[in-house]
Amino acid sequence: MKRNISLDIARGLSIVLIVLSHTPFGYSYLFDFFYVQVFFFLSGVFIKSSYTVENSLYKKVKALIYPYLFFAVISSIAVLMLGRNTIDGIHLYDPDSFDNGPLWFLIALFTLNIMFLLLNELPQYVRFCMLWVIFGVCYYLGLNGIDDYTDITKAGISLPILLAGNYYLKIEPFFRKYRYVICLLSILLCALFIWVIPVHIGIRWIKLPDNILLYLLASFSGIAFILSISCIVESILILRKSLSFLGGYSLFILCMHWPIIRMLYDKVHISNNDIIAFVVGAIVCFTTAGIGVILKKYCRFFFK
Image 1 (cartoon, rainbow, N blue to C red):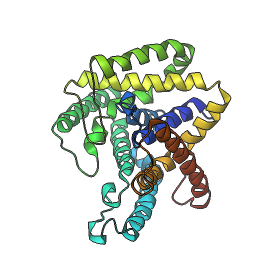
Image 2: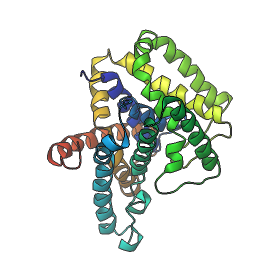
Image 3: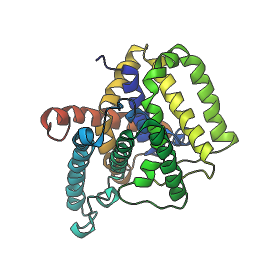
Image 4: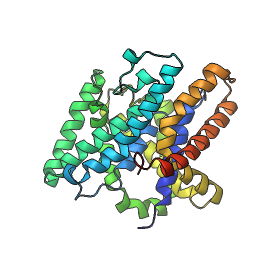
């Protein structure tokens, strides 16, 4: 099956935005309300109706839990060597304890996938109803700041987004045909949710708007923007190659960028300038992606 380059570009764009948001880049408010949702959406694209927990669990463990454990152990060793924590203070289930917070996403994505695969075994109408019930309950929990180390609340509020991704390939020809129109409309909607009706969403910290519709509309506006931009830049060779490369190794960028950025700004004391932050973000993205190429080649047990 031919690889869908535009989806790699979408991953590449989104991981760049995530890295930039972890630098002093001053314009993160333009995109920090939707970039995580893009990855949840893309995760749903290739989940088929025949996939169940029974036939897919090991694949999900290998794709998400193995990398999590690999980077959790490496990060823990680094934290201990640098004296940033003690052995008693490190807990493998808590990424913040070994100073690699972005790893939370792998746990949340694993929980989300298991939820969806369990629902996948139900009749379609039951599955649809149960999905929205779980979403509603988890949204209520999120508004009250209730979650645990399995990230079940984060996963639950992301179920409709993964479900939408599950249908994307059916409407992709429409998306490609009207990519410029969709891009313009999504920009206008994002502007609406930034300046006119400000919507603040932070999946990591379960920061949610009280209005559940605003959460969905703002999330899907950002997703539509990234997907339409991906279809547009696919025809621009240098952007296609660079962003699809970053997208293909987005897992490694996600798992390695934060300790590097923290070291650069805490120890090297790089200037808090937007241009410098952008350059640093780009360098970190390509450097960690390059390391990912090596790890994927020589650590095949952990990385499929």
